[in-house]
Length: 359
Image 1 (cartoon, rainbow, N blue to C red):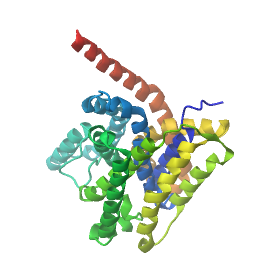
Image 2 (image 1 turned 45 degrees about the vertical axis):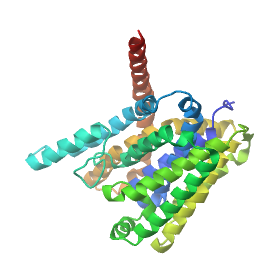
Image 3 (image 1 turned 180 degrees about the vertical axis):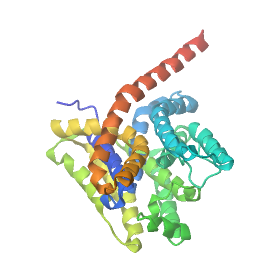
Image 4 (image 1 turned 90 degrees about the horizontal axis):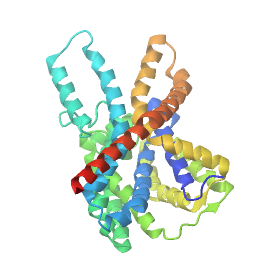
């Protein structure tokens, strides 16, 4: 029987949401609303980090030390995804080298290597575009350490209302803009914006609203009692059902905002209150453990499968099951033999430096 101290349903929501993103990027018809998973990621992150670090942050843990911990958590797999994307992008120089293109490549790689967006390109992280959300995640982590942990419950609720109103306003405005229509032409709603520099107002509000909702729910959640039930699979099914919905652009913005502002918080509450049975808990634990690696690595692997389909003349859909299995398998290998050992080593180095500084 899995331990009851872990939020297994939250693991499951995060794991299946990561798979939804991977399917959306492979072929949008597989998961038309998969981009909404990112808003759920921010919400889950706000909840987990507030539960884990609020006491420490309010009793002496410096914001810089907290952000160092977050960098250690995020950077190894971020680096792997960035290097994979860079290697694929570097193939443009196999036959000839354009100095201007090489300069752009070097600049973008330098900034992205430092986990910073590329200032000279429309896309923040051209080697692994999904990394935009990791950058905004770090910004939200800084807001947590510097501001949110010091707010009362009432002010946190007020912050949610302010960010929510601003998000609705920005989404409506962007839906009537040329950028918003361009986004929908790629079969996703306006709420999906975040990959490009021009998306920053909506991306920032997406992040702040969802992350703050997660922090607020962590603050309001004072009784850690979960009900063991076979109905724990229902929130996962509801989430996937929402991601599968394909509707017209005129209705898409309303649907997306209802999901972000109502359905996602309810899914989080369900994850807090419900505990799945042993079998589902085991699946949720595995997928939750692999979710970050899956998200960080899936785009470079996806590019390889797209190229494989092109070279063989077979349809991309025929490779979809193999693509999914490959990303899951490599995510497990990367987590177990790369991410976890490297993070342990980095933590040891940082702790060693602190001990040295004290002597």
